[in-house]
Image (cartoon, rainbow, N blue to C red; front, side):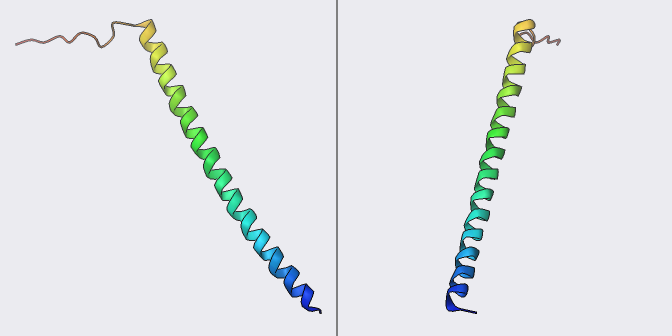
Length: 64
């Protein structure tokens, strides 16, 4: 076993840790993008429902 083998193992461990961190960041960014798309989809669905029934919710019936 040579000293360079230890250095290579340490370098491999460092690169592996960096890759794991980058994967975690990428997954978090994808989750954030997915959440935003779902919110936008819900907003578009609500806008489409309101365009079909534009007066829905505009009036309130009160009795005294």
